[in-house]
Image (cartoon, rainbow, N blue to C red; front, side, top):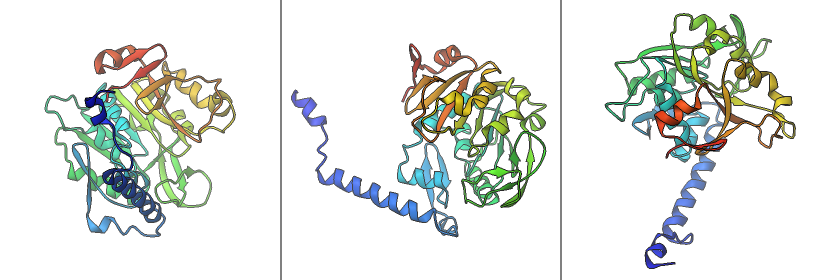
Length: 303
């Protein structure tokens, strides 16, 4: 090892690194306690976090507190949404929470960046919906048409019940929780011409959402959704109908891990409680347009 190399090696026991590790631990403990409080004591303080070129309100939200703990934790997801949302005229966000992923589509860090001209976002939790609206107002994008809806999305139009679990509740058809209106993507997106990215994060109800989006998926260049399989079982046995529903619409499926996309192996046993799937209509187009590097069945996303 030469002298220059030695200078780059961090000393894990140095005061700076120890302070950093202590700060991360304190933030982790504080976040775990704050998210369990019965009320949101953070939002009234009007404290803000920097997220790329945007500001977000510090509040009682798992995602927001995760960003507070480590602003780089979701950097890859933020960048990927920025890129894929530009593939069509519209970005659709189902389960928008406090608007983190909506802000990613509303990127403004480059004057020449290609934006989607329309954003449609759904969040049935009224507390989170109000915070999302505030976050978007703080980062107003005058050239984008915003359609923010405080409703749930499912396989049919009607009503459901949102579990009272703060920011991670699931909408169910049976009694129990807060009654909410339910719509379908096919109903809302009838007049939409093209969708760059459809993002779905609905705590295990992804199949219901996409079952009501068969026509909408035909307009999508990419779909990002979360899969919640049973551990120890092959993926196709556990969530096969969901994956086949997306595959049959002409998509190739990849798992999103850190900076890489791996071709999804449906026969592989699952060792995680949940993971993100990225469905691409044309991986070659993404490689050419965004500079993704391809190595066999693995794609490396740029940092």
